[in-house]
Image (cartoon, rainbow, N blue to C red; front, top):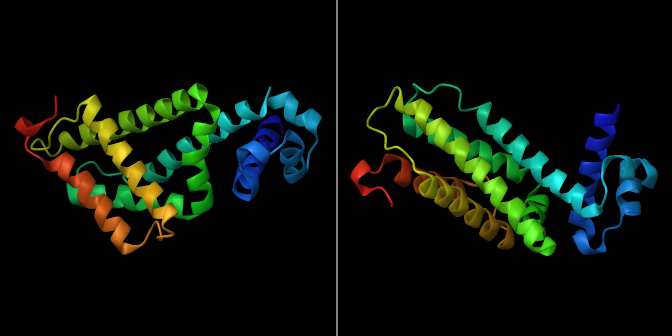
Length: 198
């Protein structure tokens, strides 16, 4: 029951972010949308900012789960794995593009705390990407080993492509967006090892 209430509050904060932004959202707003009380909110989160960071973390976990549900066979052709993973990434964000936009932009409203959270999220996604590539290399030894800097660059590049799409009202899961993102990731993963970044 406790976990369910926390999840409802996190989802309610996501709704409030889309409707009015983080600065204008109050704890009372979140509690009202969640169908609970401010007291219940404070049983789970000390502040609104703490709830936002929980939302940030929850969406990151759900995104990885969405990709993991699709990229299941490390022996599959790497092009197929990249396309499947990127498509899952874009579909997840396209389910709620307004929240995807708020997710990216609102972290800056928390100053250094938000930037640290953003870095932790990107580091986590980069580590997951390296894990996927390492698993695939067991079946495709010609694949390059991704370093930390390269994997972070891939995640950062996908994030920028996503942000530009939502700001331009371009469908996140449209064919143009998919092909651009697939080409970007493939260029890193399939490039010769001697071309690796320092």
